[in-house]
Image (cartoon, rainbow, N blue to C red; front, side, top):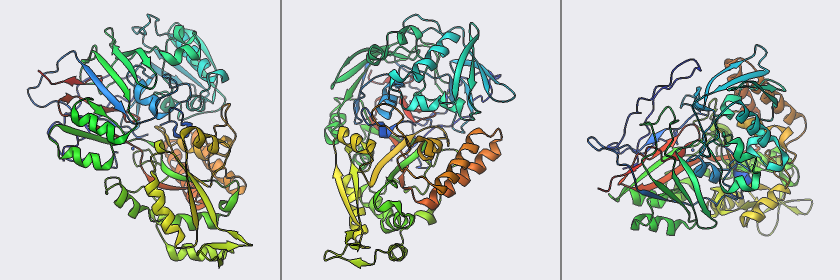
Amino acid sequence: MKNRQPAYRDEPTSSSRAVDRTPAPTAKNLKKRVPFAFAAVGALLALTACGGAVHADSASGPGSEPVSGGTLVYATGDTEPACLDPIVSGNVPQALVSTQYLEPLFFQDEKGEIGPWLAKSWKWSNDRLALDITVRSDVHFTDGQQLNAETIIKNVAYIKDPKTLSSTGILAVEKVASVEKIDEFTARLHLSEPDNALLEHFAQVWVPIQSQKALARGAEANCLSPVGTGPFKVESWSKQQEVVLTRNNEYHTPSPTAAHAGPAYLEKIIWRFLPDHAARFAALQSGEVDVIDVLQPQNAVAADADPALDTLIGSRPGHVVNLTLNTTEGVFTDVRVREAFVRSVDVDAALKSIFMSTVPRSNSVLSSITKFNRQNPEAYSTDVAKANRLLDEAGWTARDAEGYRIKDGVRLSTTAIQTEAVLVPVSVLEQFQHSAKAVGFELVISQEEPASFNAKRYAWEYGLSPLYYTKNSPSVLNIVYDSAHIPSVIKGGYHANNNGLTGPEAQDIDKALRLAATTGSEKQRGQLYAKAQQLIDKQYLSLPIFDQQTRLGFRSDVEGVKLLSPLGMPTFYDTWLDRS
């Protein structure tokens, strides 16, 4: 196996410690596949934001010296973003590309600890209702604007402005009531209530720091060419074709895990949109492109057997890839029916046959690398006998001519909406459909284009919806399970909580989640998130399937490919082309 092994190292976790830029350990000659415990839209707001951190690399072998220059061609299989600014909306396709040109205030390491990046230091008030952030005084954006306290004020205001149409960012800063300038480089954030995930939020590329001069142009202009402090900058965007990124020759703010300082090695990156899986892999094989993502299991196997290719696969943190059950109407208003459906399907068999055993099963609503994740295989194991018993108890005792259960003349039926970019292929749903039928449950699969998928999800026109939410914190549970997020977040109908549970059971979950988000004790925080997961599991609000993943295939002469903490997005700052 030629999959590159992740390299881990400890980083500073206190604002008072100096940043150590010793290069991370290399892994050029390791052939073991990245463990899944480490492993993990445009228009799909369902696939919005990304705890534990990810760092992996394809560092060069002994004696190899990085070469400056050259153009890297990257072909993405994710949906083309509608906007290159990840504050507007806030989804994985935006995070993939914007990681190259935008940077956050803080760095979060693989243990979940926070360290400085664009921020130099920070200090909480005793009541944890105010946070002072001091930024570096030696940083300028690529448009010449200096980073300062005003930058933070303008960025938070931009995120919270309803006209920006932020979904991920606005949820990340929802407790920030106001921001004031303390001095030229220090801003004070005033909170409506304590938020122990706020520093984690500001370590995400969905809450990046952008030039206030550029933000003043408005969201429409900023969507075309965001201005950050990153190693690359946006030169052009030919929609439905490619984004061209050029090197920032003044760059000097690499992450703590970077292998060098100063500007990037690559002169240019061409970021192409190539959604067809077969065509994208063929382009990689032929050398037409240098790196691809959304690497399919069969292509990963082929790449491992090809000396001209390498692979890099790692987990993303947050809410796992899952089927979310709509409890607002239909058969899933009954928790017994929800559990019966979960117990009826054989997730392990589907992953073995469709994903060729390359994607292990998840038994938690949190990704395996997310802090405080609680694996619960008993709750999500296949148990056909129990599924039948639960459906009998719920009154679905009769069967029609096709073998489906009926009650009061109505068939036990639900519809799963599906679209290509949501990571649960139709073939997996078809296997679920077959096993569900064995207990008398009809599963209808409705394949949608991205626009209609979103429209149906926003209007609650589904029984099941494949979803995930990438986020570097257990507080992702507050977003996707707190009943406060059932109403639409932004104009257009996006709701972060897609199960819609209300009533006493939802109130119990809300209470645990809200205490978990505000406590000043990390020990209590962990205990409360464990309790919340227990309550969520008991309500069968979703069926966990597998961790989100970043899956890259690349040419073997492309060196220094890495996945960057904390979201596991690829970074090409240390990348160079060994083609001399």
